[in-house]
Length: 268
Length: 328
Image: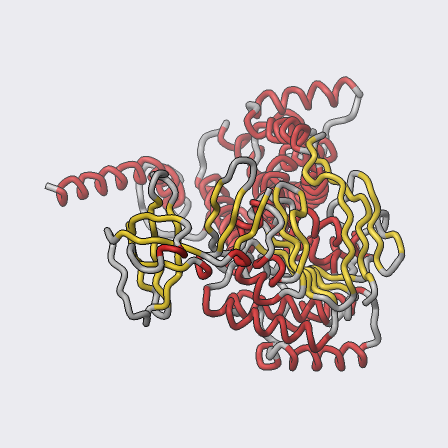
């Protein structure tokens, strides 16, 4: 009886997994399909990938995506880390308020974020382009950075910093030699996460993109209007692969930091 | 006998609540002073005020005659050993220990000389390249102490440094710490809630309760002549007899137990044995006194005594007049 229940659960989990991933797997499969038509499998080929790399527009979109992702992730991580450090010093009363405000962008519908940014940029008469894209991506990235770095900071506690001061380190030396190295895994994880999110973002980018700041997701959307071609499948497959890889690395960094800490802090 | 730390009318409030009412305390250079009290009695707050991590609400603290209330922690010539060691997880044992000297930009030849000295002193030479995560609790504790004493502080503050270790290790390290203190000649201010630890290591003990130092004295004075009911109850086992407006304290080892009909002239009270606990060299005899159901008297009896006490036996108890302590 127990066994049959357990196998029922495992069947159920597999059904959920298939529901979640089957569309993506099929998309990936068809990126290797020799036929232009998505419905029939005719044979294995790399040619869609090759044609992608010869496509000028794809390469432009890729370079836009990379420029925007690299710049916005660095800025968001720097600002978010500083914000987390500042928040950490707030008194409890204000901390709750500030935390709420910082986390809000995570739950606000992206459409609203995009729309409000668009309104803002057009109100101040700022031309839409790479700069507005970067500003928008920094805006939603900061919240995630604050969440990750704050977790590292509160995990590290105050004792290490007090110990450093006790041993004669000035506030700056304490930050440079103790705080920064201890929260470094969180900073790296933030960098990778915000990079990935910028690379993948569609909705907000859709609102604030200008004529020559088309990123890969926007380009794919444009292509789909003319029907789903195998190139789109190939491009999507590459993006999925890169995203998963980056998230894995980010997660490894985040965990590495956590493990280090729980081993050494409390020898109970 | 020179005063090294002088706390003058120091008071601490948190959010308008008085945690430590104004008090003064002089700590003598080279002594081992223990702040002893139950958790929440203000002993750690007091230590952190001396270290510079808490500001007194009023009063002044002097180190070697100089006021240090407004001196930040990193400029005070003393070091704190934290309860959970607070070793830097990303640095090796060696780098942890050298941290203080590096921050103060001590020449590297001198750094090396002092490092070797301290490593030998704390038996850490073989572990110098390890990371804190690769050390046992006792070893981490040694690193924390080495990291503090390498700076030759005038005063070493220790916040329950043995609290997280198991019983046997704690016993050994108590001895090591006491020897270290003697060899280095540094003033130790030691915080603990473990009265046995306090008794075995300290030159003087300050017993604290609710932010107040109830008694300051040598372990003998505190044990034999407690000055308040709290001290009498907190240090060791004690029998408290209530009188009209005062109390009488008699240590269990000072209580003599007599058979009901032997030496009746020495009986101060009579009662019935409710329990006998065998503890090796001694046995604890619990006696319910006649006329007061809830008063249980504890007596320590030598296990090798001729008579084996039994629960249910009627007995008389007595003690010598000089062994009783009158308390308000």
